[in-house]
Length: 134
Image (cartoon, rainbow, N blue to C red; front, top):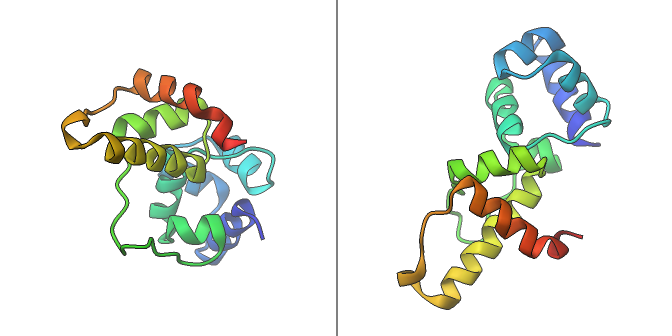
């Protein structure tokens, strides 16, 4: 089962139309229809808004089950990364990969090198490592 199918399944169980869910999640009805029919991928921000409106976890929408990270910590995606991911049309999984790659590089260099990236810096970082996502 795909992410789009899971979104549609939960939407229908909640008794929502595509129009109602799209308005609540602040996305277009046409885009939601494309996502539900696996014609388009949804970025992390849109997926998070849908998950919140549907009362579902992002993990469930993506993989069909609730996953926990190794340390059982909450994953926080910086707003700048979320915006860059949406502009680059990255999936939630690719966004997490980008964040984890960044965190791994910072861990190797030490905390004194840590700085908050701007949206443009996240885009440049993605461009520099995009071969990892293939």
